[in-house]
Amino acid sequence: MSLLPFLPNSIKAALRQRLLKRLSAIDAGPWTFAGDGLATVHNTDFLRAPEFERAYQLGSATGSWNANQPRFRVYTACWAALQARDVPGDYVECGVNRGGMARAQMELLDFQKSTKNYWLVDTFRGFPEEQKDLVSAAMPVGTYGECYADVVKTFAPFPKARIVRGIVPEVLSQVEAERVCYLSLDMNCAEPEIAALHFFWPRLSKGALILMDDYAYDGYERQKLALDEFAGEHGVSILGLATGQGLIIKN
Image 1 (cartoon, rainbow, N blue to C red):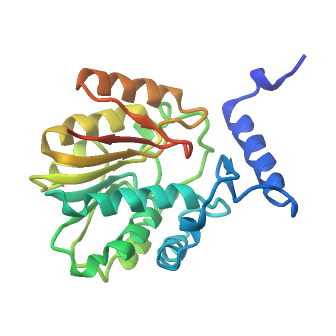
Image 2 (image 1 turned 45 degrees about the vertical axis):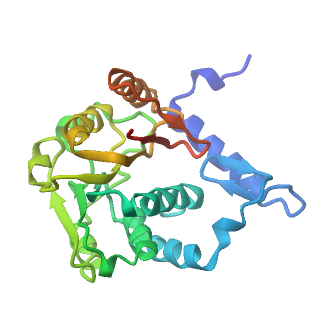
């Protein structure tokens, strides 16, 4: 009898990552990409495009991903940010950590010249004490630490980067965006993500994109259920992606 169904989600996730890492190391393997929970034999030349490679390396330099290399997820986030460029409103990211995703996006958006704001919302010190029991069991303890000073330094070259430190949802009133073109949710916890959706939904412009980083991740089922329920209540559906992310385009 297999013991796999009885293992904690965190251990299953670690075993899966180890397996994919070994598969990707096989020289004769068929993979064009393998890592971060995803392996494919299809064309992935876009992941090696020079402009994306530069953006990815700048995001990686923030120290956001440690040994994990979420290249496909970053590509997806960058694509979404570019699609939102001509949609009215600001960018918002709830769940920033050290800012790797946003830094990569800003590079491709040439954000130093942007007239839009990019609101970066986080505690910048890990999970709030009152939310620790609600965070996905798949998230290793101690994953995130104090990083506020580093984030301020990372985004200092961008006049339109607005760093908002605090706990969601209490801090959301400080996001002074009348309209939103792009919303990223990556808080590893259903309650603040649903609260953020309720707060920003009326502000999201037609055509705005909502990217949910943990939507289809193994071990994050509470988030998926809550996000699906919200989507159903608002007459939209979530596109589940092979990266583990979820995407809504508001109509």
